[in-house]
Length: 138
Image (cartoon, rainbow, N blue to C red; front, side):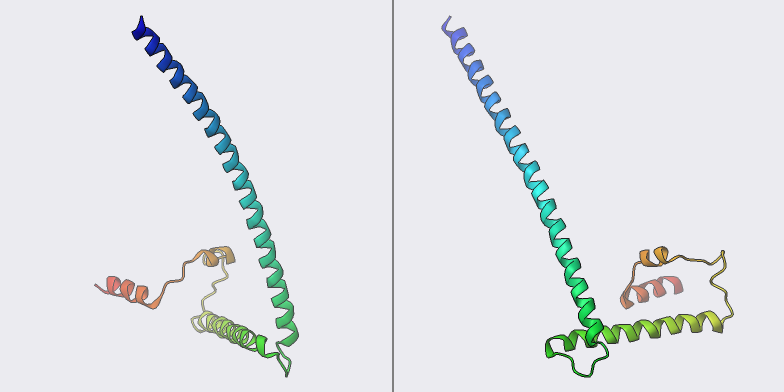
């Protein structure tokens, strides 16, 4: 009967270790869930901080955008924003020129594109445009 006793002891040992493993796994799962919840809270707080920084930046930009004297630490940022706004204005003018030069009414239902669709368009670089042009012209 020694063989059956040994087998019984081993099975009890396996069962005990399996139970311990299950308890450890459950504890670790609970810890992982808690860590995930905490990480989500961290990300939410970081997002809120970024929003606050953005608001601070808007206030500073509004205050100094047209000022004669700009604090040195803001000057480069304000200049970049001015340049970007000018670029946007130029691009909008080009769009209007294209619309009016061809007498195309892009605001008709047939050609209408909403802002969400435009924002979903992926911007491609000049190299990609060259590749596309080559493929079209072949």
